[in-house]
Length: 96
Image (cartoon, rainbow, N blue to C red; front, side, top):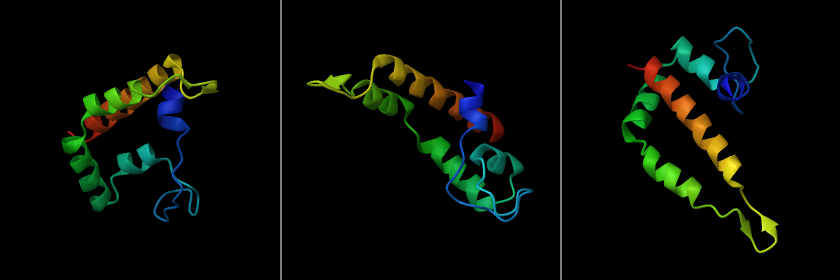
């Protein structure tokens, strides 16, 4: 779970200020370095505005299936919710 939460995500954007010049960045590494004040300000705005209860409710409301088409099983919903909580906790910890 830790690997999925922190090590695997790569941003579609490339940043030229980190060690891996021209490489896609890991957003948690980028935020942790704190090199971009606009990014840190955006993270803080997000942390102050996010309503995890509304996000959780929305995810839980996704049907497991529609007719014979599988949409999202409960175990996948739980995985996404746990992943988001881990990431949110890390962002909160890094920006307090």
